[in-house]
Each structure stands twice: as C-alpha cells, then as structure tokens.
Amino acid sequence: MHNSAAWKASYERPRFQEFQLGFVRHIDSMQAKSLVFSGQAMLVDLRETEETQEGKPAKHQGYLECPLSDFESAINHIPTDIPVIFMCAHGIRSMRVAAWFQEQGRPDVFNLDGGFACWE
Image 1 (cartoon, rainbow, N blue to C red):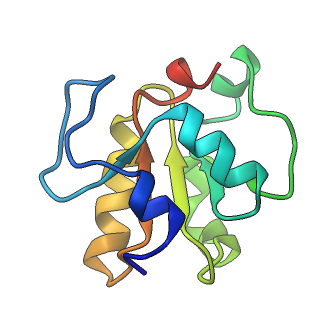
Image 2: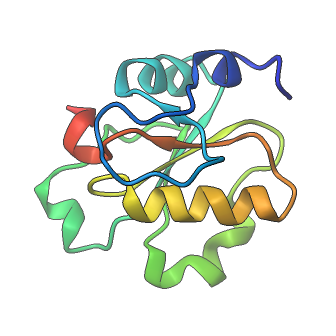
C-alpha cells in the first residue's frame, strides 16, 4: 500500500493546521482532488449536516458524506479497496479518525490537511 499514489502524495507534518498526531499522514487539497477525481482515492466527509451548509465538494463517486455522529452506522460504507482521505472542517476530527483506522490496521488512510477550509 506504500506504493499507492496517495501514499506518495502524502507527508508526515501538517502544513495547514497546527494539531498533529505523530503517525497520521496528510494530503493537501490539490493532491486530494487529483486522487479523488481520478478514482485513486475516496474522500470521506466527516462534517455534521449543519456544517455542510457552508459548502461541500461536488458530488462524485469518490465522495462519501459520513457525519461523525453517524460514523458507527456508516463505517461499512467506507471502501477498503482504495486509499481513503478523511475530511472535516479544519482537519482535527479527520486526523483522529485516520489515526483510529491506522490503529485498526489500515495504513492507507489520510487526513485532508487543513480540512474543508483548505478544500476550496
């Protein structure tokens, strides 16, 4: 999995947010868009419904809305066959979810550095 385009595009220290968990890798919005729109990764939006009123990425087969409050029931919808990029408003919740997935043995999960604030 370390040969994936997502892994090659990722980096260890966040550039657009201050909070960091030591082992979570990050991807900037430009790389994330390229990977998602080319089908090489899935973008999972963890923001709550009221947060998405501020805007959201264009609907795409590589985009999944999965509010953190519904995470347990939606976890089975997160693909296991391609890398996953988690996104929240500013990158903190998404980094924690990526860390949890890594602890469960999934190395191919990433945090969108800076969250939705950096997506646009």
